[in-house]
Length: 106
Image 1 (cartoon, rainbow, N blue to C red):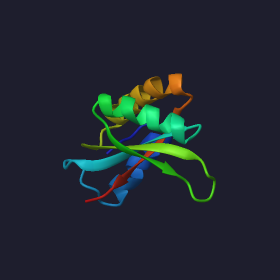
Image 2: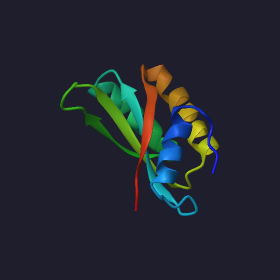
Image 3: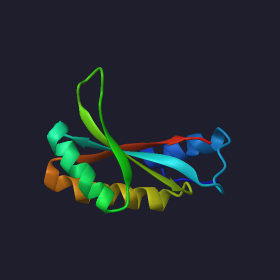
Image 4: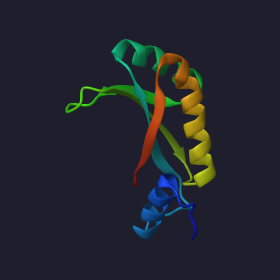
């Protein structure tokens, strides 16, 4: 299977090499960095209104805040890119930005 030569493509390539089933929906976690807890709580309501499940989390080591949004989906490069763009657009007015994704393999 071929993937684009960027960070998202490399992550998908790694998952593929690890034997993750790309024909089965996976739980994909998208991270949105936010400046503080209050902003994160407001943004989380916006994200939930757009159909994302999520929660707000503070990193124990860096004290940085992030909204974590999960979606069950097939691992598809274009879909992952589109979701990150959407999250970026929704979070930008709140001082946030899309900050990567990960998979909890079933």
